Image (cartoon, rainbow, N blue to C red):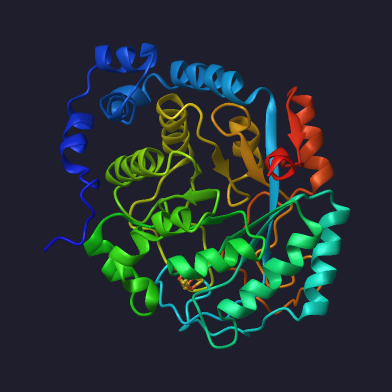
Length: 368
Ligand code: SF4
C-alpha cells in the first residue's frame, strides 16, 4: 500500500515540464486562472529562458495582491536538543555540539530584544520532541510569547490534533512544518531515526493543525534534497490540497534552500539562485494570493532582488542558535548558516529605497 496521500502524484506533471514549449510558457504567463498545467510549463527549461517575463508577471501579481508591503518576522530558537536523525541538519542527535535550552528568564530577555527591534511576529523553534524540550516546554514559551507578540507561530515537531488544539489555546496562531522531501524513498533515507521518520504522519500534520483550529500553516520542501521539479510540483499539490480542504485557513509557502551546516552534508540536487528565482516566480504566478516567504538563509543581494517580486514575507535579523539575540554562546553551531545578517534598520532602509513598506504589525490578530 502506498504511503502517499491520494492528492500527491507528481509524475504525470513532471512529464509535462519536460514537454513544455514556448507557446505553453506564454499561455501560462497570460492565463487568468493558472493551474497545475501552467505551473508545470513555468518550471521548464524553456521558461528559464523567459525569466524576465516571469519576473514582470510575478511582480504585477505580488503588487496586486499584497500592495507594496513586505511582512517581517523573526525566529527564536528555544532549544537545540533533538532526538531526530535528519542527515542534513546541524541539530541532528548524532552531531557533537553543546545542547541547551532557554530558561524562562533568558526567553524573556530574547523576547525583549526582539520587541526592541519592533518585531511583532515571532516564530518559536525547537528540534524534534526530546525529554529536555517536550510539548509542555514549548507550550509554556508559547504562552509567554503570546503576552508580548500579536502573532506567535511555531516550527517544531509534528503533533497530534489534540496537541495542536492545546497549542492554539496557549496563544499560537499557526505553524510552519516542512515536509522536506515529498519523495517517500528519499524521505526514508534522510530521516534516519526519530518520530519524523514517519512520512505519512508528517505529511498529514498540516491537516491536523487546521482541524485543531490553527489559522495558518507554512509548508515547504528543503531545496537541494530531491529533484527540484518533482518537489515543486508536489509542493504545489500540497498547497492545492490544503486550500481546497481547509479553505477557511491560510497557507504560506517557503523556499528553504539547503545551507552549509557543521556536519558537512552536501545537497544531492543543488539549486542555484537562477533556478530558485524561477521556482518563486512560478509559485507566485500560479498561487497569486498565497504568501511566499524567504528567509535569511539567502544572500542580501538575492533577497533584495526578490522582495516584492514574488516574495511578500521575510525573516529579518535572524539568529539560528539558542539564545542568539541576548544569550548566545560562541561555541554553538546554528541549525544552518545564515547569509543575510543585516539588522532590522538596515533591512528596512533597503526596502524603503525600493518603495516597499516593511510591515511588522499583524492586523489579523487585532480582528481575531
Ligand atoms: S530538522 Fe528538526 S528534527 Fe531533524 S535533526 Fe534538525 S532539528 Fe532535529
